[in-house]
Image (tube, rainbow, N blue to C red; front, side, top):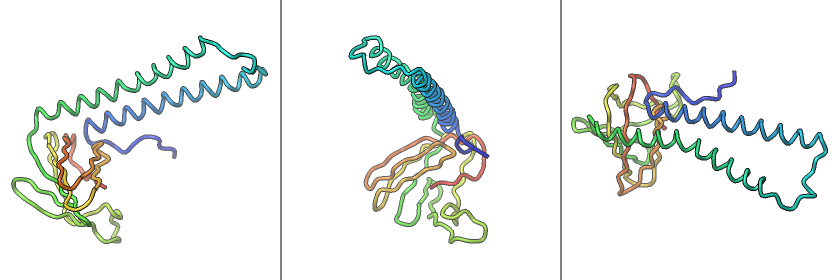
Length: 187
């Protein structure tokens, strides 16, 4: 079965990303069908542009229409960006994620633990299942601070629409608002 969508999202930011992906996919599909249909009509009629050297209307159209398409693509992107910024006003809890060479460390004001990947086997997801899971409550806004102890690491949870690079000596942050409890695998 053909599946063109993303994973099931677990946050509003992820839902915005999924809607934006679907919107841009349909827009690109429409433009591709339109251009292919236009080229096939011109090809069948034998019409060639070899006689024309200058046409100001064509130049106006091929400048204005892509600009209009980019404007329509920017609106949902800005809505998602401003929504993620509004989450910072109601933060309920903080936690830190520290990237190490072979594992991740999670800490909060109450606990600290290291998260190691399980060895392959026993029906577990390869390179995704861990020994100690990090639990988040639903409908609570979290501020997550990211850093690294050695090199650049990339932390992502696709269901939340979250991907942050962890740099040594620098703190990055993001906001999470899980909609429902569940098992969410990071990478």
